[in-house]
Length: 53
Image 1 (cartoon, rainbow, N blue to C red):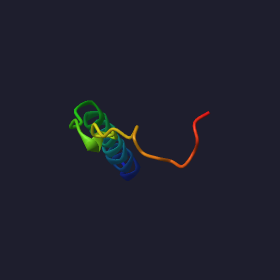
Image 2 (cartoon, helix red, strand yellow):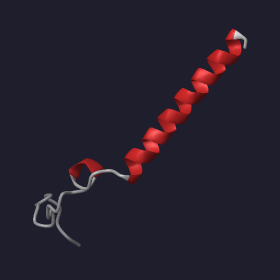
Image 3 (cartoon, rainbow, N blue to C red):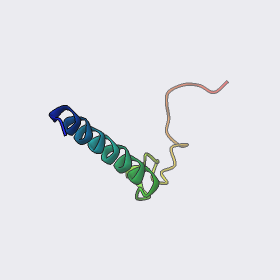
Image 4 (cartoon, one colour):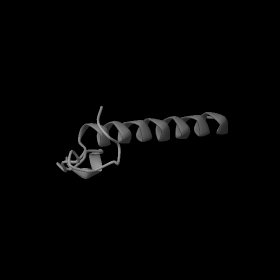
């Protein structure tokens, strides 16, 4: 097997591992603030200084 084929195979395996890891993390992510939520905080009472209407 030539050196070029070995390099291509290593890069392909690394890419498959990387994409698989991203998929795994997105499917089995922990629930909570790490998953880009607001953690149940109610922001409706915050005064922004703007008058409604």
